Amino acid sequence: MAIAKRPVFESLGDGISIGYRRNQGAGVWVARRSDGKGGKFERRLGLADDYADADGERVLTFAQASLKAHAFDPITEMAAPAPAAVVVTVRTALDAYERDIRTRNGDVGNVQRVRAHLPGAILDRPVAKLTVGELKAWRDDLAEKLAQSTVNRTATPLKAALNQAADADQGRTIPTRVAWEIGLATLADAEQSRNVVLPESEVAKVVAAAHAISPAFGLLVETAAVTGSRYSQLAALAVGDFQDGAAPRLMVPPSKKGKSGKTRQARPVPIGEGLARRFREAIAGRRQDDPLLARADGTRWEKSHHIRSFKKAVEAAKLDAKLVEPYDIGEVTIYALRHSSIVRQILRGVPLRVIAALHDTSVQMIERTYSSRIADHADAFARAALEDFSPAAAQPAAEREIAPEPMAGGCRHGHSYAEYPPYRNASGTVVCSECARARARRNRRARRHAAAPPIPSEFAGADK
Image (tube, rainbow, N blue to C red; front, side, top):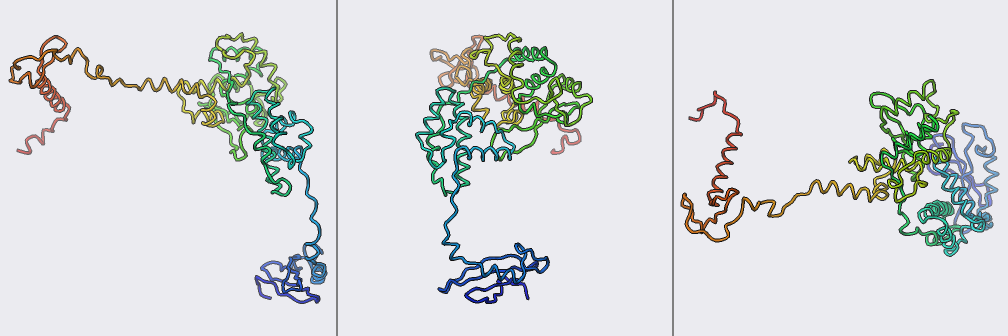
């Protein structure tokens, strides 16, 4: 039988036919049943046993295919009730969202924060039955206990989980998203960043205090101060991420923040020779996949391991409260070293695009978070480029003072003072304006002649 696009059918009686379609590989069995009104239904049954032994499910003999064709009853199947839809609750939506984040190697802490703040009544509520008032009341109650920016950061993962559940449901049981689009709307004017920025002198105090606590902790804090990387990124560094040489650097892994399309590539961050020397001493005899920044017992730094020690370092550093204002010294966390690194590079003229790449963030985020610092920096740059175009600057009065009263007569070259008003120069001498212009033209011609290259002697007089 030749290869064909349509199967060849053979009647089995009672409006039932079985067809076979020849392919380049194994052929296919197809069932066909008439509806008695001139129409028909078809269904693929499985592969023919042309090259493989029949198993009764995927690969069929002619007899097995015939039995399946007799069992094919599309009318009854269409009349059968649809299986009950699975009810999606907020809890199951968050569980599915957490699994998706883990698959994408994201930060599941965002979902865990949502669960910690959601009451059981909302967690067990079917997503389709959520109301605007219910979600808005929860958000507003949260705003009484937390900063508005924290409320937005908590509500955002919840909205993402609910949107993912609605996408998967495809409108079967979740017909609308109005409940969370309105009830969890972002609080306006909540992005007032409270970023503690320390001057270099105070950063040095914190680093010194951290080294006094332990060499391992001191190395962690010093690396945070030099690179401006997040704690989670520093904890993920391996020995192989330290690239030694004339220009030492760290290959810092990306953070788990951001959207799912983020490119997961380590980025090179330069470090100084002092920090590189400490790394050489610390990694001696260790494997490439061992943690670069290890605790005193050799284990990797995990979430929150640093908090108590950093608080002790800040207390021991005895920071100048005036240099920390408008914040309290108690608000200084390890994240202040990141903010300080970014601002330090802004004030030293490093392009924002380079700063964003080194700190694993975006230009837009830097502009939004550090806008006041950028404005001060831009003001200094703009003032350096200002020009004074006032008439006094272009024509000093001492040299261009016009005689207060018209003068009679003229200059010794015959120029009338009435036609060419004179002026007095710095020494008080009356100068004819036309003579001054003629003198300026002669001076310009003389300068051009002096600047012209000499004519080689072999060409001298060639045009005579």
